[in-house]
Image (cartoon, rainbow, N blue to C red; front, side, top):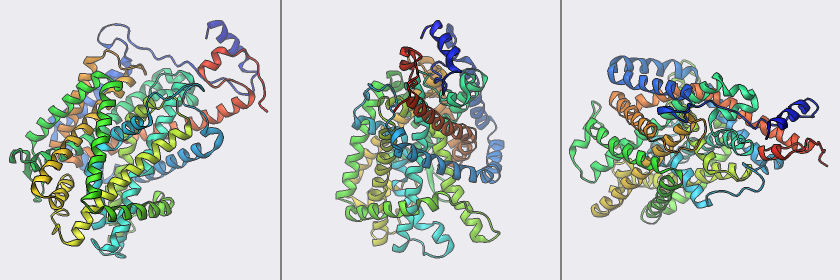
Length: 578
């Protein structure tokens, strides 16, 4: 749009029944040197904050551990209600936008645009970058954990580890891995993609708030939003990488690569040794950095398709050799129970009434639900940006149903088949407590050891290690590219090798330092606290996308353009829709 066109439209804007959409959000970037093409106001502060967290954990481990412990009992508990209700509202708004005919028909892009990726590749990238690593850790671990302890067992209405405790175990498992996670990702991705591809705004977090705050997002407020998003992304991905590294090392130990990989804790549980953590991070983050340098169209797409293929092979094994029929029964019954109880469970916030049961319920929710809601929110800038990047050309309805329903069903299928097999082996006595007694990172491998002959267990465990490695690499390289995109004011990743290398190293140091400091618990607490600022941004993004869609529907009614292309071609005439 020319300057004269801008002036003409601006002067007539006051005469319009509704103003034109913002189709330009300039973000200043450096034009030379090391930060050429980057917003230094975002990149440098984000690097400093992440570096300070890493140095804090490395050089002041005792104080860091004490601070995290204090935060776990104060800050996190005080904000648990905020996380619970925010995630519930995000999911509700997502489905409303998809189900309302007028909003569901809007396209993420121009009316003529077609999706860049096939549906199979789209689903594979959604699943691989979003929850693939967690599935391998929690597919057996979470159903088993809730089978042994959940709110119903805490209240005394059910006995732990009995057939009656299986259905509630799956209600809570599906609650955590279903619409809550993917609804959060979908809304963040929609808020970004909608304004980026319809209005040609930069593909970055701040652009999603332009419908609320206008061009002020070009300045300091926008810089702050993007800094918060980068830090949240590093912390969210660190949880995923931390879980993955622990399981990766456990798998390497299972297939016989040496006793040096594991160390015995004071409580008798085995965990990854410091040397194993360092070596694993060098391999995994090194591979992910190489993949990130190749770009989303090559490295990530190829790895995502490989992930999906290996996942289906492993699922087929559980269906055929494991407790397939029992698992499918749990899947069907679990989905029904989950949907029926979803409104109540999504809005339940336990409070400490001074009794032992009340305190136990509060702790259970902090350890599970609040942890997950914070994880999904911290993961949302990365996954949301990535989903927006690969979803251009799809309608709002196809986008939301695709992003929320398909990956949720894949998660449920994993939990049903893998978790159902583990529970069945324990209830039948075949496992003899060996699966329940293993650490959560080792329970999938323990299930395979009971289910298969030693030779087959070795082969399949090797397959799981390979699958885990590809999932970890996919998650890490996607995160590195997304961070670079935010720092680059929404531009494509381009030739930014030194910055890709920096963020790869930062991710490795963050995961390694926190794992060595206090294991997964240290990363978990740091992430929950770090997700708080972005949770506020997420709430604003929800309001912004609702406003953007409502205003676009009003513009369509009055014949006013809703896209950057339409504004460029518009002659200024208002024609009311019939």
